Length: 439
Image (cartoon, rainbow, N blue to C red):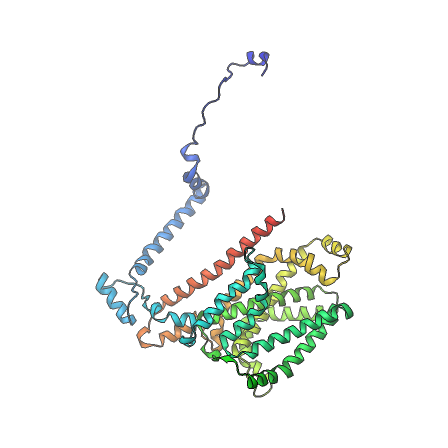
């Protein structure tokens, strides 16, 4: 300020005042409460109503949780203990049913001496998906990812060890044909030839080959029937299997629906619209009852495999539409840029189009996965013991636990929430990481 300007004002501060703390009502928790809960009369009213509802629920259910009994052999014994401790008319949870039957909620009717097999399969799942989901996992472990499905099936169902080896060899055969012929006859023709040879291998070769190898060199572990599966072992098996198969199938269907080839586009559209137009429970009944009518007499098609295939079709149809939305959101310039670089169709999709489309589609894809995982409980309607209704109904058939109701639902619901919440949080983390990678 010049001398002329300084003489024209009444007061000029010649020293800075020390910094003062903000008023109590404008900082910290008080400010947060004022801005988020009491910012207006409607917000204040809703806050008070919400607090009243929460208070009522807590006061109603908290004693039930606090009076819970963990050590009892029947629901009658639970009620006796609660009455002795808290007086006549007191209520409480009988968590003893969870303590006594936890193995059926987790493993169903899987033989107890073989629990190590589903546990090992579950632990190896993290080794298999680690290189795909987390950047800090060594990429050297990526070779295990395509091997894991065959190893997991063998661990869970058991039987001859030649079965997963020869099935894996069939997919390697198809991949080898694709790689050898792609440069000579084109990607689509090479894929068709590889798929045709692979189907012939599975129809006519793999069965006798497995039988012959098993006769020459017996090798395997104790088989376990699908009827022994139940609880979260069944739900996670169906959920993980459906997720691993529905994502690539959904990508193929989404690309097929946008294809310029009329036959491919028509097949993709019919498949997606038909599957989306049919309730999942209908597909499960098809898997349970009708599918056997279309198979050769005497064919023993595993019920869990049938359910997994149709659950995969159901999820893939929805994922295809989610990914199609991601493809439609890309600017036309991305496709033109791929053409300008001279990339063929598959390279353009793999290097430019799909990475961006999948990034856009992450929330929808994860939502579909979460919905599919929860829908695995519908298998109870085809005679399988899901953890939500099948196992609790079986437990209630025992006279000791007849009348137990809320405890199984709360236990199963808590585990479902933990697993689904973990998937949701990973999805959000992945979105943030990809967003940072763009800068």
